[in-house]
Length: 427
Image 1 (cartoon, one colour):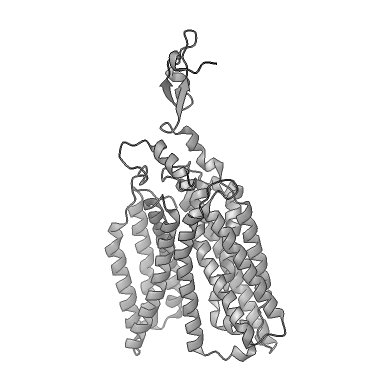
Image 2 (image 1 turned 30 degrees about the vertical axis):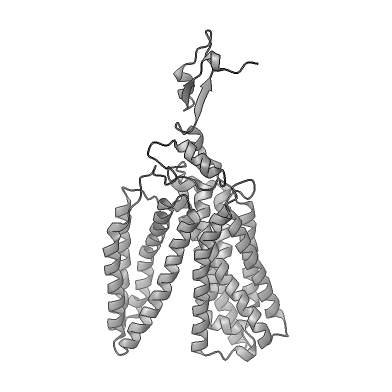
C-alpha cells in the first residue's frame, strides 16, 4: 500500500466500494442464503483492511513526533469501535427480534452512511511537514537535533527511499514477519473458539460456565485489549531510548510484551499438563489469558511504529501490510490447531485439552521473541539521509592552489560553506 496525497482519495473510494459488500449480509439473512452471508464478510474484509491501513497511516503522518501516541489512538479507536458496535448490534437485534434482516440493514446502512460522511475529512499533510519545526523558516537540521537529544526514533514523514518489493529481501522484514506471526497467531486462534477454548482451559469445576459467564469474560478480555492498545502507544514513546541495541521504543516494548506473552503461554502449558488443576488455579489461568490478550494489543500497536522505525515512513505502510500476511498465516494455522485440539477431545470422549495448542503457541511466541531481539534498522531504507542537501554542510578551507569549487560539494549532494583561510584553525 503506497499512499500519498494524490492517491489517498482513490484508496478511500475503493475502500468504500469494497465495504459496501457487507450489505450482502442483511440480504442473505432476508433470503436465507448462507452463500450471501458467508460472502459478505469475505469481500467487505478487503475494504476493512484497506481502511485499517489508511487509518494507521493518517495517524502516523499527523503525529510523526509522537508515533506511539498516534498508533495508540488508531488501534485504541478500532478496539473501542469493536466494543461499541457489538453492543449496538445486540441492542438492534433485541429491539427487532422478529426481523433480524432489518436490524442488520439498519446497522450496516448507518455504518456506510457515516463512512461516506467522514471520508472527505481524510487528508494527509504535506510530505515535508514537520510539527517539530517551530517556525516556517527554522532550520530542519536544528529542529531534528533537538528531538534527537532524547530519542533518535521519530523519523520525519519525508524520510526514506522507496524499496518496493525489495523490502522482502531484507533480514529485518523476515524478522518483522516472525514477530507478527508469534504475537498474533495464538491469540487469534484462541479468540476464534473462545467459548470452547475457555472451558477447556479451566478446571472441570468451572466448565459449566454458561453463556452469560463466557460473554462477561470475553467482554473483560476486550477491555484488556483496549487498555493494551492505548497503553502500548504510551509505552512506545516512553521507552524511546534511541541509542545502541535499544534503538527503538517500539522494539523495546515489543520485546517486553513478547517475553511476557511467552511466559504466560509457558504457565498455561504447565497448568494444562498438571493433574492438580482446581478452581483455585483458574484465577491464574484467567490472568494468563488476560496477559495474552493484553500483549497482543500492545504488539499490534508497537509493530506499526516499529515499521516506521525499521523501514522509514516511506516504506512503513507497505512493510506493515506485508507483515499482515504473516499475521494472517498465524491466525489460520492456530485456528486449525485449536479446532483439531477440541475435535480430538470430543472424538475420544474425553475432557478437552489444549496441550498441543499451548505447546505450538509457546514455540511461535518464542520464535517471535527471537525476531524482536534480532530486528534492526534497515539502512537501505534510510540511504537518503546521507543525501539530504539541507541537513549537511560541506566545509572546506580554500587556498590559492586549491580553491573551493561548488561542484566539489554538489557531487556529494552537499551545500558548500565558504570558510576563509583566516577562519581556519591553526595547527
